[in-house]
Length: 357
Image 1: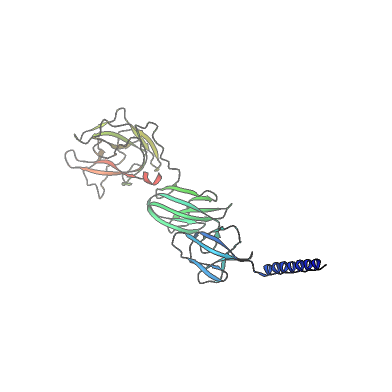
Image 2 (image 1 turned 90 degrees about the vertical axis):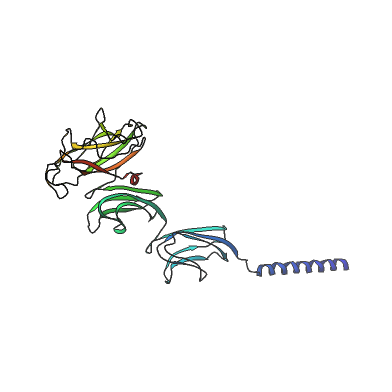
């Protein structure tokens, strides 16, 4: 009997201790968890990052990108990371911080007005022969440039939407060119050529069909509009021996016709007889051997020096097998002071190839 009483008493004590331990365990607060939070992207203004009413990081505009990695203690399901402009109370973005998983992240693309969810890398590459061009994003100027343009910009955009790039002359409102930027394509580009009046965006440098040849695309511009007959012209090529200084017209004859309106045409040039040769050229009226100028006196050309063919003595084009080149051909006068005197017209080449490769 005594044994039964002892046994019952012992079991009662064990049960009481067990219940007490369980109660004590339930009263202990849940331990916080530590997670790693990463913020990436870009911003046009200084930003502050807040967690539990404290600034835990800052980002300065103009540093190129946002790259923050920090450890955060999470006690419950309601924690949030807040982002605001530095010096402001306005919250531009908030994200929940969860107890799991360990690695969590957000991406921010902020232009100072709106937060976007992705960025497109846009390469603008080309050449403006005259004047200055303005490049606009949705009506706002992002770039102003003359001459060679080689600019890479980050265009912020939301998924499933588009934005528009426009090009116009500086100080004017007429849009010369526009391109739609689509989301989801991380790398996009605009390649253009501006001749002073219009923009061409379809300039292509196709390789020569025969890799031993050289492909050239060219357009013609005159420096002598008062004397130019406003006709299509032919560029006629010669093999110019740099050792003997003798020029021989290529046979069969090679003519590249360039329209008077400044359009582009292309031709493949065959290899020259040897490494000491270059191409030189004359400028004629299309289909003739007549120079496309009237013999009038100009401030640069004195009386008694009529325009005439240069017979391949001038105009330099270095041959590069397998290459594709883009040229602007501008006429140039070369005064011949020996008898018979004259103005031998040749051309100067502006190589634009690098802006379309």
